[in-house]
Amino acid sequence: MIQQAEQQDALTAATLALLLWPNHTVEESTESMTQVLEDDNAAIFLAYDHDKAIGFAQCQLRTDYVEGTDSSPVGYLEGLFVLENYRQQGYARQLVVHCEKWAKHMGCSEFASDCEWDNTESLQVHLQLGFMEANRIICFTKKL
Image 1 (cartoon, one colour):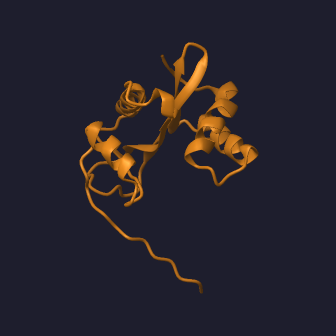
Image 2 (tube, rainbow, N blue to C red):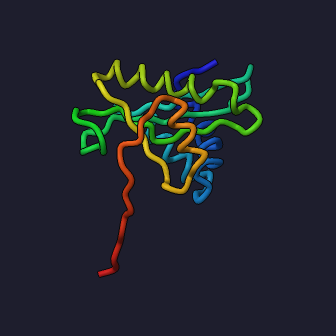
C-alpha cells in the first residue's frame, strides 16, 4: 500500500531517508522531512507492508533548468528507497508512479531524476522505471 505522507509521518520518512542518506542525524533528517511535508511544491510517499513502513519516495517541483527537459515546472524524484527485503517486488515502481501522478496533477508534463555516476544499482532502477539517461556531468568546486 502506498500513502502520501502527512506531518505526523515525518519521523517515519526520516528514518527511511537515513538509510538512503546516512550522513545526517535523526534530528536533521526529521527536520528536513518536516520542511518537505510543509512545502506545497513537494510530496513524500510511503510504502507499507501492513503497518510497517518499508520504503519512501520524495518528489518536488523544480523550476530551474532540469537536464534533458524543455518545460517548467518539472516533477523531480529527489529520493527513492525500499528496504532490501522488499526490493524486486514492485514497491519502487508504485512509489514512482504515485510521484508521477502527483507531478502531473501539479501541472507537469515531464518527470526527471538523477543519481551519482557510479551508482550502478540506482542507474538500473531508473532505467527499469522508464527513465532515459539525459546526460552525465562531473561537478567541480574550488575554495576562494
